[in-house]
Length: 349
Image (cartoon, rainbow, N blue to C red; front, side, top):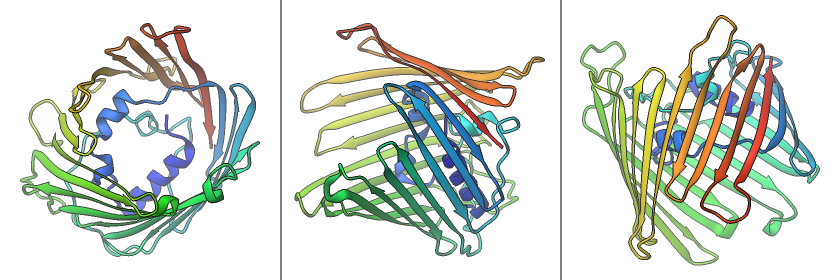
């Protein structure tokens, strides 16, 4: 389940019309949401509030082995609209299969900014985000972490994003090992359409790559990928297929996800290493339950791996509370069968 600050950031992207799906970093978003969902650990409570349309706060308290928590504050120069936990659409809170939309032309220049700060207790780790639109097609994102246990006491990463609809490029720099990087994604075919057009495309094929180099440790890396996905006007079953390759590490990953109905989605991922010949297979699904007379509604997520690991997660709403209950069991590993078990409750106004 997305935390409140992630929801506020998504509301900022929606208000400023920034397409987060048109990025190489989100190439496998559908599969990750169905197969790599986070399972709560221990008991955790989240209390959040959008005090005004420009300012929000969030408080988290957890009890896994020790009492911990965090304090978060966020400010936006543009008004944000976000419903409370009693009225918010659960599909905005619980990521699942992502039905991509036709790419619209860039909006008019928007000079908007978002500032976010978070302190983790009791360690005192600080986390910050500065997000700013520089124009109709350009955005800068700067994140920073301050922690005495990290090398040099913390790190800062800056990303300059340029998105025209047909293609998106990102340039990044991190103070950690002086990392330089580039990511790019290009959409094939007539994908960008004018608003109100009747002959909308029914599919999209995207190709992308990323390159990065650490100046201090003199290490490099790269990956490349392809994605085919159907759009809402497609007459058949919505589906997404991806293929990614890391030639330096010899890692190959192929995924397939489909939306079988309004309440059911399935996904699978096969991974293979060309150097070690190791492989892995993960299967997953999500089943939505509609709102009944008692107000119960939610989604059940499940995944199983070739090695015998099984994960279950039930997320939903009860009255004005959002909840997540889940666990991870491993029938093929050593030690205890139950690896993770937890409950998370969230309330926002």
